[in-house]
Amino acid sequence: MTSYSNFGVVGGGAWGTALAQLLAAEGAPVRLWAREADVVAAINADHRNPLFLPDAALSPSLTATGDLADLAACDALLVVVPVPFLRAVLAELPAGDAPLILCSKGMEAGSFAFPIDMARELAPGRPHAVLSGPTFAHEVAAGLPTAITLAADDAAVAVDIARALARPHFRPYASTDVIGAEIGGAIKNILAIACGIVDGAGLGLNARAALISRGFAEMTRFGLARGAAAETLAGLAGLGDLVLTCTSANSRNFALGQGLGRGEAAATLMADRRTVAEGAFSAPVVAAAAHADGIDMPITDAVARLVAGETRVAEAVQALLSRPLRTEGR
Image (cartoon, rainbow, N blue to C red; front, side, top):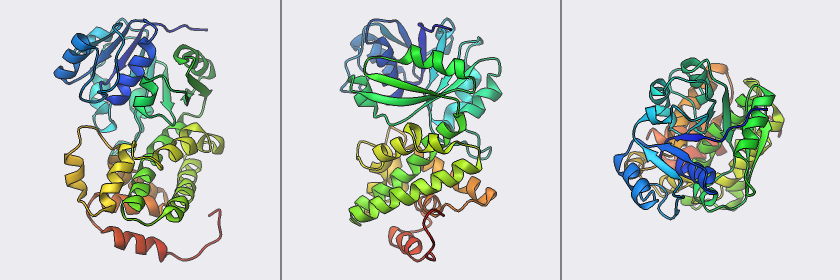
């Protein structure tokens, strides 16, 4: 059994800060890298991240840096960088054999790579794992009860990292289904945008329940086609995260969808946000990957077209409602 106690966190957004606070809450030293100089300064001077997690009081044992080299001594790194910027940051990490725990959700445009794929390519000598599940950053930082999936190809690595991350209120479940954890995290964000659209357009709770159910069918089709286990997709990293983000405006993706449902332009909504709604980046990538593999994902395709400004909400809804009737389970 390997023990990890000196954690570093790569990424100073809300989720990265929440994870750093989780690990530092009992006084353990945690080093957090952030690109924004004002975030680094505020964490070190005031024990706050006013830009991304303003309501959380951070432990004095959590310190921030703008230099990735300062994480070289850490024995495990949680990487919490939005997927569009992840490859560049991974390439800049200091050399070492510390495990990389990928905490970002989505697929890379062009390559169709998940975060774990990029980590394997750019840091092949390290153990790799995926942390994914139903989590709002502010609740984790506040110490509210949370359960999450920790997946690694090696079962022993998954168990060791899960034990190291576990806290009385934070319960990681070990898994070896890395691809299932990645797919659940990527697709639930797209479906959260769709559910936000339903809410913003005033289409009702019946429509939202139907969309969650049919969206889960899309997630399952895509996941099984790529080798994921059905149990993972029905677990915390799939259905659990889907339910959370499809039912609350605390989700950035749901809130983006609400704006789209009210008729606001996607470009305007995203330009006004400091935080990233991952589903807006993932939707066109997953839609393209599904088309390439011949997988039917009409909700994902509709969200991709709405985010790109290629269709209007009323047209997208009508297109979905006009699809041929079929038996359930397909």
